[in-house]
Image 1 (tube, helix red, strand yellow):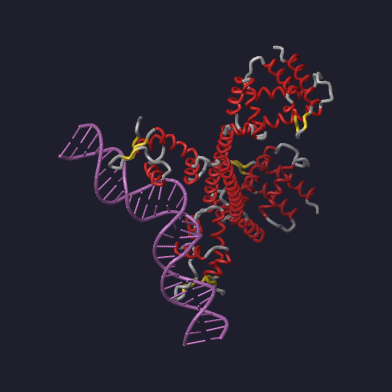
Image 2 (cartoon, rainbow over the protein chains, first blue to last red):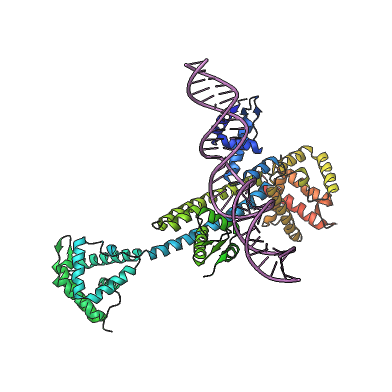
Length: 252
Length: 252
DNA sequence: GCTATCCTATGACCTAAGGTAAGAGTCAAA
DNA sequence: TTTGACTCTTACCTTAGGTCATAGGATAGC
């Protein structure tokens, strides 16, 4: 019969020496032999028992329970496991609830991480953004302040989505620039308007303002410049489309 | 400002005094005031902080983590919660695996809890069972021994099911006793045969043996006695049905 | 003022399943 | 014989408090 030292048994079963010491002290797994110098040696039977112990430990049973089920011959294992499983189910439910609350909390937090003034113009080169803002402030001081105030209260996630939506809508519109700008069945203009509304917040005489933006697109090529080149065709198309939209959709 | 003693704050927040002592010692929640005699008094701010602590504790965060997130102003709570949630998901998966293994183990165990000799005849009065077995052993010693040997290897659950099935089949057959015993469309006789086969195990010359059992039903009224009264009509019906079944279905 | 009762503080030990370390002894090979 | 690997025991540490034990403080009734 091969005898195993503590270290050998530990390695064979994938546990530490400390664990075997503990199991010995608690009576869960006694060595087959104790030498005069108190060295522990284990046989095949002990290895098997250890493997059983580890199996039940994997099921989440406590060492005390394992000791009971291994040593009591009349132990009702099925009943014990059934009960144990119920406990595990409860734990799982607790975890579910925790994760649900975490999700809610994260959403809440994200909603509360407001935009900073920096992030508001993060998509543009810094100098250009400053210049732009200055001009806008001169032309429509109240409007710009109102818009910034509202955007700064927005959540980061919300602003990101708005920005991306606007970009995507613009790309779709640019692809339509050779079509009829008065075509009523282009929902992209409606979407463009919705984005602008969200950027501006509540605005007086919105129809006129929106048409004014259309004028601006034509007058100021910076608004329709992509990758360094101004797209006058797109600007003209947008101007016509926006005027048409305002006249037909924003009457009341 | 209302000051709360330890007990008052504990009751207000639903924790124990010990908990507040602990939180004080670890720095998680210091009282607003410490009297000369070391009495602790808490204000409104501390109550709020305690509620925050308890909230995060419900999410499964450790006290150390809570202390960090409450006291570090630049703590990335979203990141922490996201990571924490992942850990919880892992735990949940572990639990799932445990429960799965438990289920398998239970099935295994149930299959391995063998019948005892007692249980084999548990449905009958003890003396009758003994007498019956003695007679059977005299008449068909090898057959009876073989059958018992096999049944004892059966699982309890399997035997229970077999017993109940047999009982149910017999009841159905008893209800048919005024019908034609040679009617081929009664699956109950087939089921009866299946049960008998399972009780007997592998048997030589099964057709003859089955017909022999039919004879026995007529010769020995004990086999067809229900609630103390022998049912000769049922016995004759069964005999005829079993002979017919053996002759038509057990030819090869 | 005295006392009974309640409240509070501190300290110590306990939980489960080991981790980690210290100090001392033992074994086997060079 | 020395060295390095191994082993022994003892003991303290971890979480988040629970449960005493002892001693001092506050308050209400008398």
